[in-house]
Image (cartoon, rainbow, N blue to C red; front, side, top):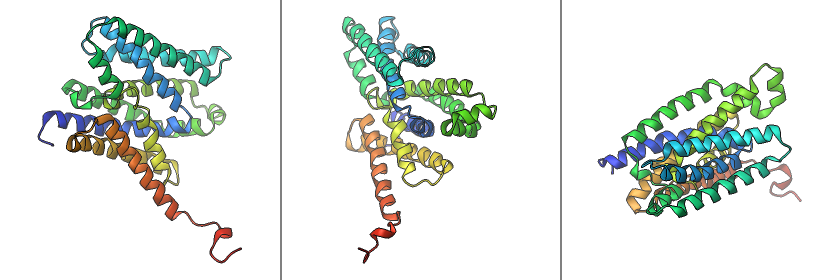
Length: 276
C-alpha cells in the first residue's frame, strides 16, 4: 500500500488536512458554525461550475474564490441586515447550489468531474495538491495555535474579549477566511457532501473524553489524523469509496469514545445499587 505513489500522496494529504480540520472544528462546533461550513462547501459547487465554464482543467482556484466570496457575503449580510444567521446561510446555500447545477447542466463532458467533487477523490491528488495542503496546514495551524487564547475567549464570551482589547472583528474575519480555504481544499478529500463531517466529528469525539479546551484540541487533532489515515487505508484495502471511508473511520472513533465515556462516568448517588 505504501509503495504506490498515489497512496503516499493521499495519505500525506489526509494526515495534514484531517488534523487541521479537527483543530478548526473545535471552534466551529463551539461557535455553532457547522451550518456555516456546510454552506461554504456547497457554495464551492458554483465555483467548480464557473471554473469548468471558464476552461480550467483544475477548478481549485475559482472554487476557493467563490467559496470566499460567499463566506464574506454571509458576514456582510449578518452585519448589515436583520436576517437571522440560518436564513442567510439557507439562502446562499440553496442559491449557490442551484446556480452550480444549472451551469453544469449547460456544460458537456463534465459529469464524471462533478461526481469527483461531490463525493471526493483523494486518490487522484497530485504533487501540487500535496504542496498546497502542506502550505495551508502550516499557515492555518500556526495562526490558530498562536491565537489559541484569544479565540477561546471570543468563543466563550465575545463581549469580555472586546473589553479585554482583543481585535474580535479582525480575528473573526481571519478565522472565517482560513476556515473557508481549508473547507474548499478538503473537498478533494471528502467531497462537497461530506466535508463538514471532518470539522464536526473529531471535536465531538474529543469532547467525549476531554476535561478542558487544551485536551479537546489535542484530542480533535489526533482524531482527525486517525480518521484520515484509517479511512484512506480502509479504502485501499477493502476497495471502498475513500471519502465515506474517512467519515466512517471518524464515526467509529466517536462511538468508541462515547462508550468509554459512559463506562467512566460516575453514577449519580441516587442511582447507586440498593438505593430506592
